[in-house]
Image 1 (cartoon, rainbow, N blue to C red):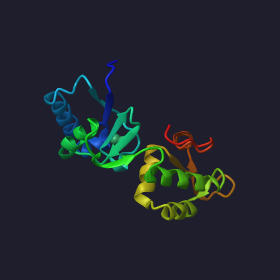
Image 2 (spheres, protein in one colour):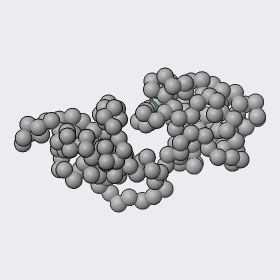
Image 3 (spheres, protein in one colour):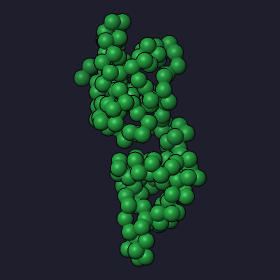
Image 4 (cartoon, rainbow, N blue to C red):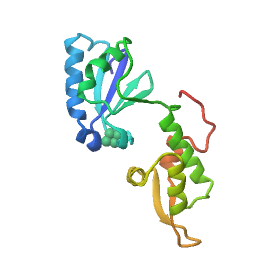
Length: 178
Ligand code: FES
């Protein structure tokens, strides 16, 4: 463990890698060394953080934020941000940012259906929260929802999984910024 001021984790799992995250981390590491910032800023790669639809993703501690859609061309802006000298590149995601709020709101709405939310109903709720069917497929692949028939009616349904419940703290009081 290095007691650096910032710890940067660049997702290099398959979806982010397909969108250039290996190039991003390579250029970022070079730039950090070139600017002699490696004693202050540690850069590591990491596995998926399950925001695959909006990657490449970069997690920054202790800021507790995720920057999404960051590519190698953003490295100068990213380094400036890490030095506290500019705005972050990409889309910033935190616990309270709109994209995460929208996901949390959708899952909360789906839970009001009961354990099983009929497919058509779930698709309608997703649409109301700004999400389309490819996004639903992606969330199912990532394990935030599961397609299961409702045992009572046999109707195709979605179940909000424990993974989503835990990540979005759907059954606990929500505290911001943590
Ligand atoms: S592959 Fe990077 S968040 Fe999933």
